Image (cartoon, one colour):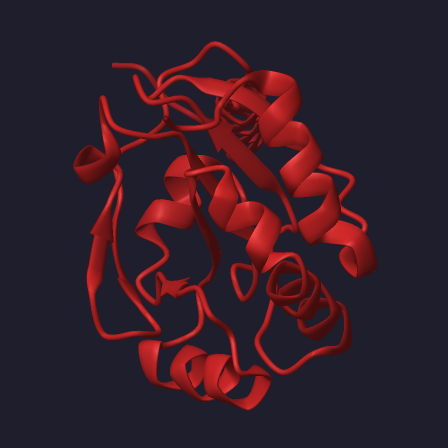
Length: 183
């Protein structure tokens, strides 16, 4: 009969917790990178329509710009920059969205308050945010990261240093640089 004392059990538990932490770190290290297939998504837009990555496949590139929280300073500046550059962005024939884990109702109010001419996508269940690796450790908000996806669904660029006040201008330049414009 094998007997375990308290010290043995505590050591074993500590090793188990340590292995779980290492495994979690390994999973975090496997974040999306350029060249990866973009995770599929289906999210409701502030315009009431549902948008999927699949609907743009073979037709146009997609830009998915995650922001932390509606009605906050940086997010307001970013969305206003997209609106201010809408003519240039629309001429590129690329599907572009901002997205957050806010509810569709909150994002609708936010979009209306800014008179946006593009939809904000909502992921209140946080499944898409998790798949894209943008959910912050506290789980309440996302990182401000922008994903540039080609018409075949491949990630061509991930911008993790978004400048909110010129986000729309930067987006247009990056779409051109990457050759993501539609015909």
